[in-house]
Length: 261
Image (cartoon, rainbow, N blue to C red):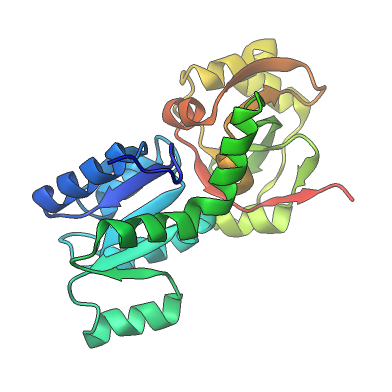
């Protein structure tokens, strides 16, 4: 059946029931969405190492990391994605689920739900941003590309690379909290060249050839279609899709930058 609503929404379905997950994914794909499936919260977190999503539909009771536990991990690791979370369960009226819904305030759907209810839930979470993007594409607009730069920091274990918007700075208090290391300081440009290989530093990072160096990306960059990575002197290294960047580099995201006034 033709559906005239949103299309192309990136959706992650998290459910340990293979039949339910497959049926839900089929319905969403028929509406023109891009859908991945994960069997529990731990599998979903692995999916998020490869890319981001506009909507996360998650069952509540699952082996391993359940729905509420998965949501709490999202709040810690991917706060922006926690705001795209929709709870799904056949046990919405049980005290534990009610307590979680009250505490989190996430939208919810009780199983079984209709296709119209599913569409409405997806639209409520992804609607405004996706609709703006759809209208832009219809007008021939290009993808949203954000310039970003590498900033190396010294840690108690050695070095780490942060990726932040080009117009921002690393907030040391925030990155120290994220890493759990009060001794983090900014590294010198010479450290960046020595550790990452000079002018080819960014290329090595984007090729995934520096797995021993942890990488942290500012959360807001994960909402971009593409990023252009530049060095401190604003020399362009490479432009690539964010999903490809996340798949190759496998960064951890968080909020640790401060934008220039």
